[in-house]
Image (cartoon, rainbow, N blue to C red):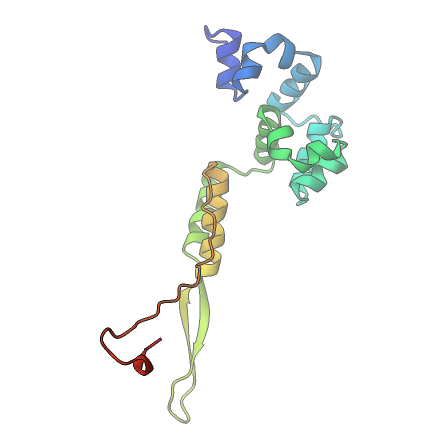
Length: 186
């Protein structure tokens, strides 16, 4: 543990302060040790995923929603309704990283793909305006795709995404001062 106490190591691993205060009660145990050992082994064991956490990660890798993956993995509905806070943690993060490493997905590859998405363009046909001339195709910025990539980056970095608010309608009545009542402008 590199000279760290159990509490310091638990905090460094991403556990909550409450869990880190009582590692023997809330972190340590044979299930946690087995999962950590499996997550940290370099060679794929070829075993079928057996724990709920492994099944949850396998479901996420198959493209299921977090809720569907949690329910299919055998988690109760109450935990499946809030998987980010009730299921995900250091163990699932390690399992996801292991699956990504096994698939050859590195952070550099992800960063390159995100960069490509932030520079997304789309073709747009532009009419020439003159008779007999062919229309031309121009590559213009695809702002919808770029926005989706920006939102995904916010999620990956754990940043809070700003809420979209509707603009409220504002009505202003302009009244000419000193004019007759019939010349009121709205």
